[in-house]
Figure 1 (cartoon, rainbow, N blue to C red):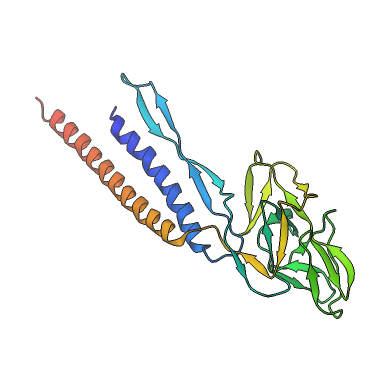
Figure 2: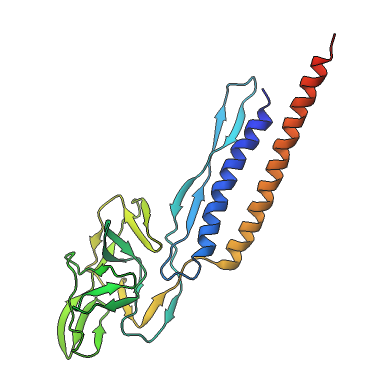
Length: 241
């Protein structure tokens, strides 16, 4: 058995997965609140051959939790999370969490995300404001005021470090463990008039994309050379009288 061929094939699959994540990150570099996809690669040992052979795994994809930069917009309906918390939104597919704080008010007063999903309060209910009551002020603890009156609160939620995140749309995530409402706003809070940018570094991701593309081409060439070597060996053996 040609171990080099199978090792190269495993590397090719791993590199293809990395190319897919890098391309997605580059495409969403300008998406507010987007958290990049990363892949953790391992190797596993096969003892099927006479000598142990290390193969590359296909990689385990995970969502990076690194924060993006905060950009001041001056828009009263833009908020950014200062800290590790997440905003909760009710999507057609269920509850999700996001760092994209670009909001809008529907005709019936529901505070929504830029994609039309209801922003939720600490209790998980939709937030209703008066579209005609004037400027909306949002405090660090998420309390919403209009005309000097408190009309609701934006919920801020903590997702445990041990939770695995699945992507929902572009900037949304769904944890495999329940999120908990933030009650201490010393280290966590909301900043009105700001938006969190993507945590993707476009230059670094493009550099990685070029490097991985070159590696993929090299592995492909290695596979082709290995196949040719095998074919040549078969032809020579067939010529033996």
